[in-house]
Length: 78
Image (cartoon, rainbow, N blue to C red):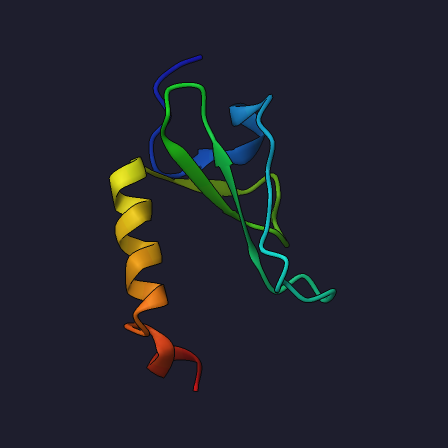
């Protein structure tokens, strides 16, 4: 597999196991994430599963999750 970059079509990242948060709602308002073979993490819009994926390092996702847990982004959804 080639080194993926931001905007790589999610369909080109196969085979990976996409997963979404249990808090996702049935109307499809969620993102999905997948661990890639090279230990990068891909994120895609669940409503456009063949569309572009954003590619992050594990450290970048860890920082995002820590910020979310700390409430850094709460104002974006209030």
